[in-house]
Length: 127
Image (cartoon, rainbow, N blue to C red; front, side, top):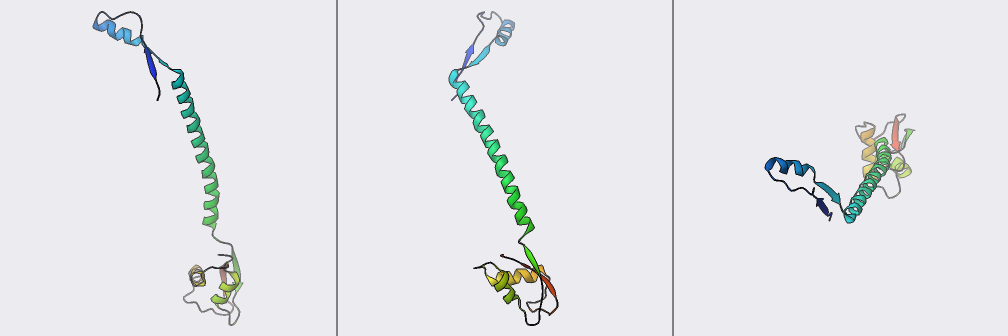
C-alpha cells in the first residue's frame, strides 16, 4: 500500500478564487514506504520485461526449428522397396510407423503407399 501525504500551503482560502489558487500550492509527498514500494514495482516490471524478451528470443529459435521441419534425406527407390522398410530405417525409435508412412506419402504427393523403382522421394530422418 502506498501512503501519500498532502502538505497544504499555510494560507487558508477566503473565497472561491483563492481556494483554486491555494490548491495549486498543494504538494504531494510520497512517504518512505511509498518510495520503497514504487522502487520494487519498477524493479519487478523491469525483470518481467527482461524475462519476456529472453523467453521470446528462445521461443523464436525453437519456432524456427519447427517451421523448418525435420531433416530429410533424398532416397532413390529400388525394386521391392516399401515405405514401411524406409520407416524402419529412418523413423525415430518408438515412432508410429503408420503415421510416418502417411506423412511421407503426403509430403511426396504419392497416390498410394506403393513405390515405383527409380522414383526419388524425401524421407524425414528421426521423425
